[in-house]
Image (tube, rainbow, N blue to C red; front, side):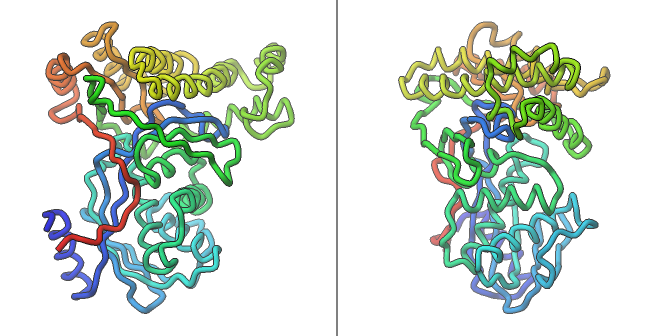
Length: 397
């Protein structure tokens, strides 16, 4: 038996007694292209990675949910209330309640359950531990109460709604989709109720490059306002045209209206919109390059994306911060070691978290040594694409 699963089952038995616990897994994710485009109903390329969360869970025949994550206190609540609770906003409990509520709203009789969770998707690592958690809880609820009938997209939408409505964070849908689907996928969010997902078959190892994530070891907890400011400012741009999101705005009309937009929304909002328009096109170019096996062209587009995030989207450094600019330092180190080879960019939400790099194999040891010397041992981690998303592990004995 896998050591992680054996330990997890032992913890479950200790806490809840010997039951026929089932095991589910949900992976972390990496964004390959489409930085902050999802909340504007844009396009992204994302992938699941070989770090995951595991849950051992069983129905308990009551209306009480008990979830114990390794290293954290037990979360217990009843399902008597399946609506948002103001005092729960920003808590893990709110996410679990929200996912149960979403399943119930789809007509399923969701009951109480016991669950133990372990994870090697580090919090604050930029691999979206929150999305992996949402998909994992969704997988448990799906398997225990929904006859395993919910799809990857169903679970992703449920997770996003739990985060938006119950947790109170205005996130997009990319993180949940990548974790739920698995592999490399291109996603078009033009219709948020039915995103178009296209698998992209590519192996970075075949191009003699490693996918590296640089964990800056920074805390995301106090950055919600920075993240929320991006869709908030873009909303001002869209509102000028009577639209809700930038995907609905004509790009030529946007440029024609720049004098008015600068006054109404401010220059940073204008620059962020420039990034979104161009980033959606870059996603198409990334997919085309990977499908054609043109890795040099892929790297060039990733470098463009990274520059755009820094210069136009401006999600590398928290506004006004002079002492802590960890992501900028990491990007400078990437440029020093890689020069004009490989590619690097801010990853995900930004303002810290992680930097992503595609590193030629012959530079990998030097690259990791330089990064770890500045940010600490193990800061640079080599990731591999996981071919499957959420899954129940049925053979573990």
